[in-house]
Structures are given as structure tokens and as C-alpha cells.
Length: 108
Image (cartoon, rainbow, N blue to C red; front, top):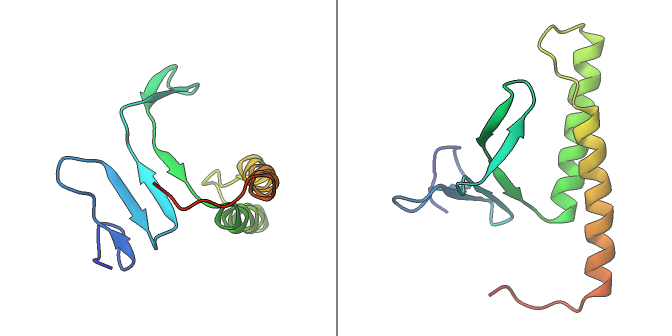
């Protein structure tokens, strides 16, 4: 797979599009949608990440561990991502439930 802006295993986005695929598992895109940023008090461009449940579960564990390390080191970087880790873990459980309920079909 060609190396893109994120290094080995990351496909560069096609010219004019803001979309990347990481290791044929994770899709990252800037699609023009916006989300509300409470800190900035305005809508900001969204980064949309789509991944299989097992990747979300792994990312949740990494974020949880990172938050724990930050607390242990008393980091001032604001690395408390326990809430996001918890939501990713719950989303992975829901996705697993859906996978079991729906017969597998190849992607379009």
C-alpha cells in the first residue's frame, strides 16, 4: 500500500478529496460536515472516522491506558480521554450486536 501523510500503511487521499484509508480497516475523512465545538462556541469542520468494532475496542483501550499514564505522570496536557474510551467501547459492543444480527454482505 502506498505511504501517505500518516506513514506506512496509509493510502494518500485522491487529489481534491479529503479521505484516507488506514491499513484497509479505518476510513478517515473531512467531508464538509460540521460539529459543535463547545470550547470555541461555534461549529467546526468534522473529522469522520469509520472503523470496525475490533479496531474501536482496541482504540478505546489505548485511550484509556493513555489517560491512566497521564494521571500517573500528573501531565498538564489534559490527556483524560476516559469518556471517549468508554463511548468507543460501548459503540463496539453495539456494532458487534449488529454484526451478529445481519448476514454478512460484501461492501459496495
